[in-house]
Length: 273
Image 1 (tube, rainbow, N blue to C red):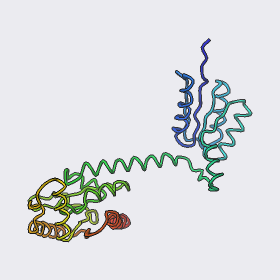
Image 2: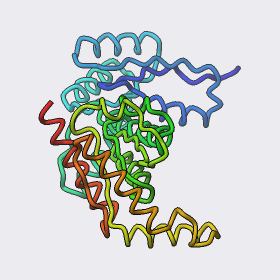
Image 3: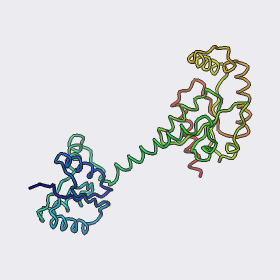
Image 4: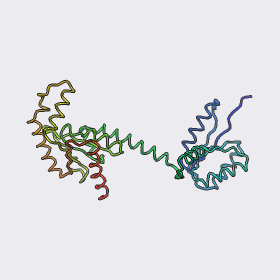
C-alpha cells in the first residue's frame, strides 16, 4: 500500500510564503509527490482559525503556521490541540531563541520579511535604472529619475549613481560635453531634481591622465589636455547657470561624502513637495 503525506494548511498573518517554503522543503524529504497544500494568508481573527481547525480535523490535514501575533498563535495551538490536529509553529522556536540570547523583544509585526524583500527589489530596480540611464544614454530617464546628475567626464557621476542606487534612489546622469546637445528634458526638470558636479582643473587633469594610462593611451590626448579641460569646465558652468541647479564641488571628496550632500538636496526637495 502506497503511503502519502497528509495535506497541509499554511496559516499566516502575512502572505505565508515562508511557511510554504519550509513545508515544501520538509515534504521533499518524503517524496511528497502531489501533497495538497492550501495557503490561508492575512489571518486576523479567531473565527477563521476555528474554520481552519475544523476542516483540518475533517480532512486529517496538518497545520503549519507563521503567526507573529501571539494571541492568534496561542488560540490556534489551543484549538488545534483540542481537536487533535497536528500543528507546527514555523517561526516561534527560532524567535524564542533570538529573544533568549539577545534579551530583545520581537516586534510581533506581520509582513516584515516581505517589507525587507520589497526594499531589496527596489534596490535592484534602482541599480538597473542607473545602468540603463547612465551617461545620457536615454533622455527619458530624466523624467523618471529621482535625481539627475550632470557634470564633465570624471566627476564621479557613474559611481555616485550606483552608490545612490544601493540606497534605492533612481539616478540618471548626463555628461556635459561642448560638442553634444543637451536634451530639452534636462531644462524642463523640476527644481531640485538636477544636481551639478564640478571639479577643479588640476585634479581633473590628473584624474584624466591616470585614466588614459590605465587604458594604455598617451597623456597627450585632448581628453587630458589642460586647455580642453578649461573649455569643458567653462561650458559646464554656463549650463549650470542656465539650469539654476544645486552645485557640489567633488574635488578631493569621497563618493560617500558627495552622496551625502546629494541626499540632503533630495530629501529637502521631497519635504517641499
